Amino acid sequence: MVKQERAARTRQALIRAGAEVFAREGFVSASLSAISRRAGVSSGALHFHFESKKALAEAVEGEALEEVRRIAREAAARDGRALAGLVDATHGLVDRIAEDVVVRAGFELSGTPGRGGGGPTLRREWQRWVEQMVRRSDQEGWLAPGVSADDAAAAIVAATTGFEVLGAEDKTWLSQEKVAGFWELLLPRLTERHAQMSPGRSGHAAAAAHRAEHSTAPDSRP
Image (cartoon, rainbow, N blue to C red; front, side, top):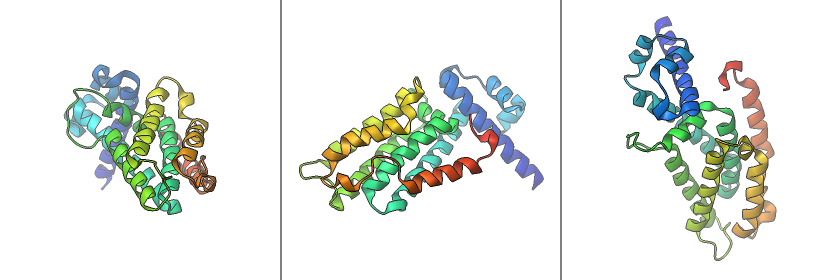
């Protein structure tokens, strides 16, 4: 059991170190030697857990994907209305991209051309979930007459992915104010009941984020 726990800690340290190096240098330029040094383990230990740089990148992206799925799942369940859940999830997503290097690196890796792998990527998963939530909003009667669910989903995916891409160069894009401004602009066009919607993060979500922040270990942030 002790050996298993130590192996699990080493694997997590390598995933985090890999995320930090991938986020800083990109997949192509990142070296396994730099990642092992960052994690404080030997090259042999790295290769015991991950046979290649590609395998480590897939592990980083997989962990980030699980976190994005958690954000989406909790946001969808919090209010019960699909559109409110969608607004909340975009705020939660931008928070995690700003604060969690694994999520940030996962998104960057998902956009790396020629890396191989046919599994789900964060951007594809996010697009699929947004499209699902917009269709649910339409079914629940929240979309204004004449608003196409496909067009609305495309606008939301493009904008939120844009926050992620632009945030890599300028962290001000990864702010709650930017996300709220986007929804302030879009909601009156999207729904006739926009007065019933908050463009900012809900109080419930903000409280949950505050609790999560203060329960996180000091070394879990980049």
